[in-house]
Amino acid sequence: MALRLQSITVVVQRSDLSRCQRLPAFLQALNPAGGILFETCWYDPYLWCETAMTAGDADAIVAAWEERGLTQHEAGAARAAFRDICVAASGKGPLGVCDWLDFDADENAVHLHGAEPGPVIGGCAQFKAQSQRLEELEQEGERVYQAMYESSHPEDDYDDARAALSEAVDIARFLHQEQTARRLRERLQHIAAVYDSRFRRR
Image 1: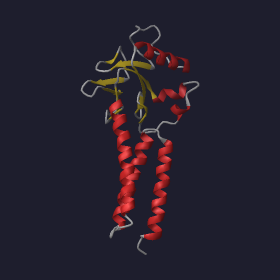
Image 2: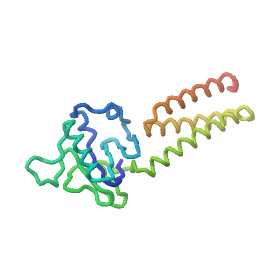
Image 3: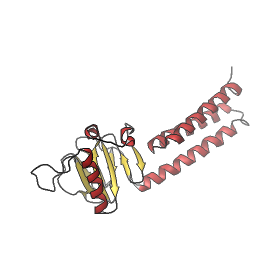
Image 4: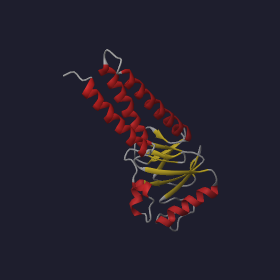
């Protein structure tokens, strides 16, 4: 996978998180396949990034990573050569030498060198689109669940409700909305129990 660049983007490798001290709890509970945590933070299986609107904000993010134990620049190397922490800009890529990142100008994204780029994760637009999709799927799941009571083929409505809400659970987890994911899983269990008790053919 790859990470969308937005404004100024600070990127670290997920494999380096184990070397960090005083790591925030949310960074210890990332989804293996990637996700979006906030409108300014997202990650894939290999990389984590945080975006900033200004150079000063980006410097503050870099400083926080250095306090956790990572190093921005190689010792004795030119200041532009990145080690553990890479700073990139939207439309430009890494602002210096970063041999563990590859930049795709067409996608305006970076991915771990040597890994397949795959789908691009991140950006405000994707965050909003996924949030809207989550809401639509929940509404669709409830709609077909209610239709099950009047349907001549309730098994079809049950399958549709289960498919919609299961996809909604996956998106909620992708967006780190764990309470929503838990609520939707409980709803799925309730719908399954209703179907089994009232509609399933014996």
